[in-house]
Image 1: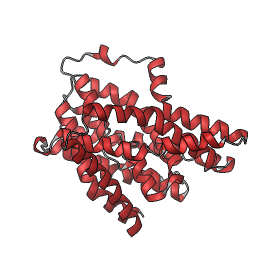
Image 2 (image 1 turned 135 degrees about the vertical axis):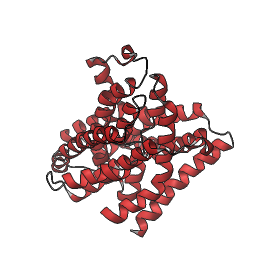
Image 3 (image 1 turned 60 degrees about the horizontal axis):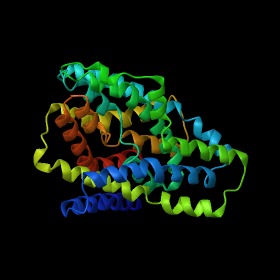
Image 4 (image 1 turned 180 degrees about the vertical axis):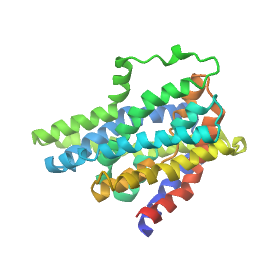
Length: 313
């Protein structure tokens, strides 16, 4: 347990470094966008490919996908709870969609992946990606639709969805890297050493770049702009208490291997999605509420991660 705590502190040390470098104007929003693109389009796909081809056998792969039902069902249950909670606490219509999305969807890549790797090592990456697939499916379908409805003018034309758009979001480079790695693994073909070395060097940047993005976001938001209210508190309740408890409770009905369950619990209890403030602003929703919730969720995660590790591990 002490080792896990120390590894988590390393994660937050890198976030703090990103914060300080932004304060010194080494980093800015442009750098954050560049780092995000690098992670999502290059380093993470290579990391997915490398892990699936080097860390798993066919038998382990089949075991991997038996656990897909647990995160899928848990996200649906958490979302239903968010609907009930938002009605009981009378969340305003101008932030109701954002609230339910933040209550339900987790930051499974930029925060979830580094934390799981810090605690469990590279073996956790495929399990983390399983939760990511379910989380991303919810976020880019139901989530975006809900956020768009927060706009008082109800400009639903901004949120028109098509099968082509949905397929593009779901078949992201990270997931494609995952599937290419699976196909390669199933062929039993050896990966050429130069390809392994290239994927190792470039994919190894995923964790540090992801955490730098978090540090930049915290600095750009600014602590003085944070305003805690009942709705922000409700988002924290969903992220750090309801969501992991739902996963844990469902594990008695949908059993999965121990490591997989631990990764799912951690993934479910991650901060708010990075993209929420950008999407809220683009759809004319309450961007200040989304930004405040995101920043609070990152800051408070320093406390909640240790609580979660103590209770569930």
